[in-house]
Amino acid sequence: MSVQSVDRALEILSLFSTTSPRLGITEISRAMGLPKPTVHGLVRTLTSHGFLAQDLESKKYSLGLKIHEMGTILAGSLRINQVGGGPAQMLTRSTGLATRLGIWDQQSVLVTLLLFPDTVNVLYHHIGPRIQAYCSSLGKAILAYLPRQEVEDYLGKYPLSAITTTTITNREDLLKDLESTRARGYALDREECISGMSCIGAPIFNYAGAPVGSISISGPPDQVLGDRTAALARELLLTAQHISSFMGWRPGEAAKAALV
Amino acid sequence: MSVQSVDRALEILSLFSTTSPRLGITEISRAMGLPKPTVHGLVRTLTSHGFLAQDLESKKYSLGLKIHEMGTILAGSLRINQVGGGPAQMLTRSTGLATRLGIWDQQSVLVTLLLFPDTVNVLYHHIGPRIQAYCSSLGKAILAYLPRQEVEDYLGKYPLSAITTTTITNREDLLKDLESTRARGYALDREECISGMSCIGAPIFNYAGAPVGSISISGPPDQVLGDRTAALARELLLTAQHISSFMGWRPGEAAKAALV
DNA sequence: AAACCGTGTTCGGTATTGCCAAACTCCATA
DNA sequence: TATGGAGTTTGGCAATACCGAACACGGTTT
Image (tube, rainbow over all chains, first blue to last red; front, side, top):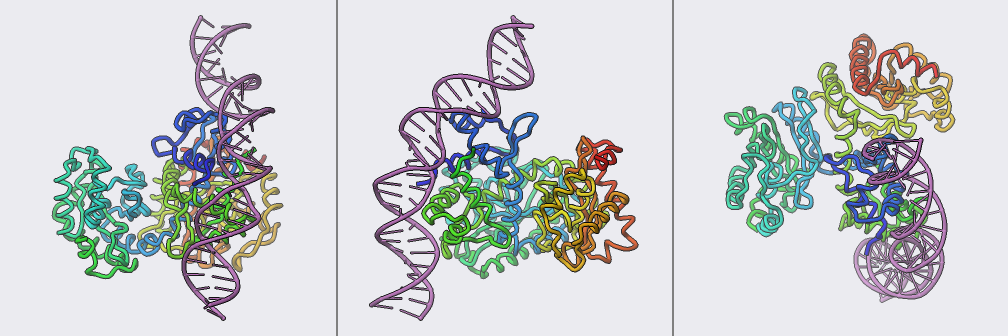
């Protein structure tokens, strides 16, 4: 049993997204199916604590700076960021490609750290913070090492929609791709998520040998796929294992996890 | 008039900090002065929405990944990050020093973007997300251009506590330092906030000529202060003005703001 | 200029919900 | 085995949240 008014307030916060960063009282009221005075009271409370902010001209609301503040506090206390930040930065430096760390959460990947080399503009594609698993190397690197039951459950819930012309949309093809991922030890994203961007991803395991996150490097296809792939993958795998060991993982346990 | 239970829930979230990332029911109950069943109901609701997460072993709670997700969404929609991210990265590249963007909010500076050059380890000092204004270049760069009344108000509320041996703790000394900041156009932090770290900061103005944020470069004193300072400051000022112009600022208005 | 429409905001009565004392469970410690 | 402290559950009561009605405001249409 939860507190209804807190439920409602948090649901209001969850309405804001990268595609809808600004919302009015009426929009929120319609989305929630609640009368406007009800919404107004909740929004006023959220605003008074800095969780929402109202633009005085348009009267629209957006997420408040308190969210940013807390997000930064959290990012700094996530273990994967604490143990993975240094190795990820070294990877960025040595490969000249963007590096991402992600956590497996609610059957998707939440990007927790994003590092760009100096040579790449930070005005990056809007990817994340949550990424679908089936069409990203971060996601496929994790799916490949999840128990079969969890993969089946995932496939039962999420349609394999085409995002680009190379997105894998056939269930059997995806399972084959996951098999290839296990054989190689790393996942490949051949512009399956964003046109013009290819990635190599590797899983990060915890002390129990379960995949809890992943790390990827990404860039234009000509810099990631082809001749350089094997060398880049080697560096990536070493980094992933390095981070996994900080998470308590011991080599040999990944194979066990895959057989469950 | 606000919604009391939402007030309480948000206050619970605000208890978590970099120094207290994990809290139990009893700790929260004591901090809030509320009975444990009351706290438990609110915490359970926050947890069910992903705003808090409970560690099953220790029973302690910490901020949930939903916070990270929303923080990332917000960071991407902040105008200062949108218009300042590229210029800030170029500054990082050309100076080889860490760059920060910040917003003036609630009489302190909220760091909204932090960029490291490849040569600097991301395992950085825990600075921010909120920084006190009187002992940081980000803050002093803004204080210097605020209306005198707002500076007086700030000084009336916040004691100038010594953080390091070089922190400015005397009111008259700070006002003189702000005057020097205006004369130069940029602020200097001579290890006033963190020992071993010096910074140069410049204000970012909006269309009305008001300082809404700032940008800084930072590193070891020997790389920031001394011979290089003038050249670094020149680059920083150009970048700050560049970003300000994207925010709608027109040259000449800063002087007007300082005279209010 | 006046009327209309849609959004945001305020007010206050009602009943639903949140609150919290009491009690319980669990685990670590003496 | 007993004790103490933390976390969790239960249920009665009254405080609070809810929301219909009304209003304010600004842009658009007539």
